[in-house]
Image (cartoon, rainbow, N blue to C red):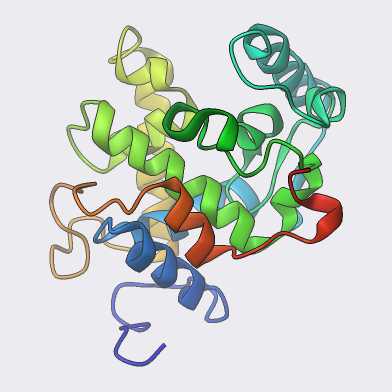
Length: 222
């Protein structure tokens, strides 16, 4: 990616994934988010695009997410598979929530409603979901610092009623440790602004078109 710094403050982020994280930052309009995405991916997938957590606990979480939200969201073509999938992809997305990506902004036009949960194994599709989720956190929640981003990633409730709880503090501590181990300085304002802004958000349709393009027919909305 000409003109994009893929060296400074990336630490041990795999060189082959840096362009993707940098592209996510550019297309989402959220300056500084590339290194944040890299640090999130370190724990959620260990940078393996096909990472899949289908433990009973995680499948229980995806089942609960589907059952709690299916009546409030558009129908998923692969709803039952999503419910039993667990989580996965580069950013550890819970399957039902991932397939509903974009619904708060565009409703029935959300682009993944007819896709199987395995679509999250495609790096650019996983990247799309992560960008949309980060935008919602930045635009709609109080983030006191960059560690709060990972608290919200774990559960938005940790940024509201559960702020300050043991779980909240534990998630923040782990994210700080992840950044230190990866070699990403979250306080380096030359690469990550002190406060992220979603003012440049292009919108879900444009982001999807620019970042993903068109899904294969078997994974595109019918």
